[in-house]
Image (cartoon, rainbow, N blue to C red; front, side, top):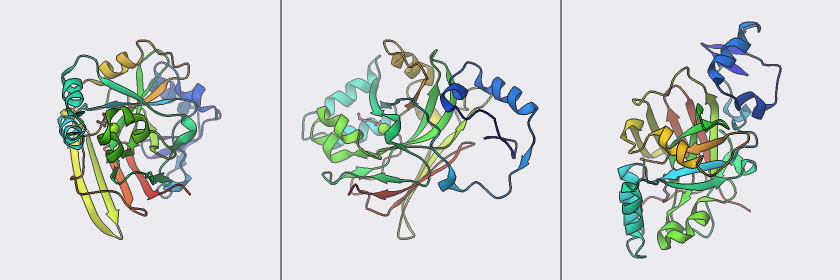
Length: 271
Ligand code: DO4
Ligand code: MG
């Protein structure tokens, strides 16, 4: 389904990979919906009816792309001696890029995200997420939640894959936003964490605070990797709750990015 200017259009093709992995995706969609019947947007779409906007793509993530993230990582790893790595990668030409999730582990808006039972300090990371086609061009955007264990990551930077990659640690949605030109640098990311109806955390930041360019991150990722159906790339977080805060089961995480929508997930744990 395509939503354009408050109207819904149903595309005949349901093959997601083939639909999104193309050059000039915006122009293609504009052409496709021209001949299609219009459907009024009755009520707002129910968040639990929306699948994550992913097919067979891998999800990668960039780290320490904002000053706030660098400060927070240096602080959490000061006792392990790992702090200096975050400082260095923030300044380095080569960015930090890591594999975040296989597609089958990704959840969508309205689904549960998990915190690890062997971790004592857990946070959501709200991140603008790029959809990059197989040629390395950014064709769309979505909202990502890079769920993370700060205690595991802080104990030793070599534990990063365990801090970042586990069941239901990656959430994407609520849609794939396909604009005619790159997303505005004034775009704001906001996050709210709600516990038993009470707001535990609320903050927002414009994406223009990021140190690196989206095209720079995409080109590093595509240097030596092929992505036959394209890939998703989370661009890093700038919103970090204070050191005392850790997520609890049943917390609600709401991430909003202008023009894309709201990604909502409740927190759970694996049985
Ligand atoms: O280096 C650790 C992870 C960084 C990260 O996920 C972020 O900055 O968003
Ligand atoms: Mg992150």
